[in-house]
Image 1 (cartoon, rainbow, N blue to C red):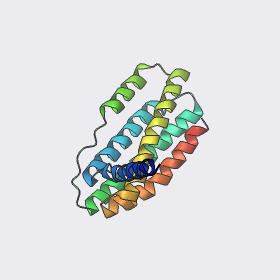
Image 2 (spheres, rainbow, N blue to C red; image 1 turned 30 degrees about the horizontal axis):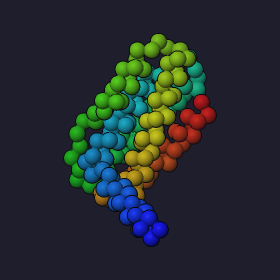
Image 3 (cartoon, rainbow, N blue to C red; image 1 turned 60 degrees about the horizontal axis):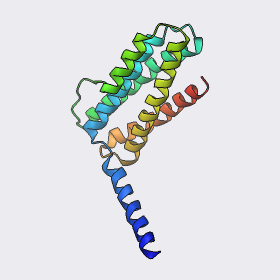
Image 4 (tube, helix red, strand yellow; image 1 turned 45 degrees about the vertical axis):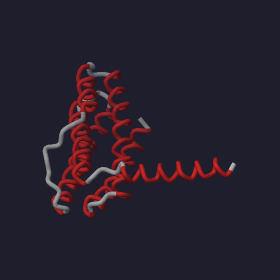
Length: 161
């Protein structure tokens, strides 16, 4: 029994260490945040003309809010002396955007968009919360803490759609 307990303690310690070790570097955080915002904005531009008023309004809000968060992260990166590169979507984000473009306007496209947005916002929130708690660059850390509640609002909006 004692060996089982010690094994559980060791596993918990490794997990805690792993979580901290997985926090992105400032440069990685900026790249991931930029990729996330780029995906959100580009997919929202496709959906801003949806026939569904709720989807159209949500997409328009995503363009506004994610453009703002991009500017916030870029300003924080400059303050933390992190070199900025052009935001580039991940392969998965590019694949999702291509899939969205391939579906004709209508309910099927709206449903795909909302599904993608739920997953994207889950990822974005995890990134922001992790960096706000464990990040190493002061301004980026504060900015992540300011962006996380906005992402939570987006999730709440999505949960009603």
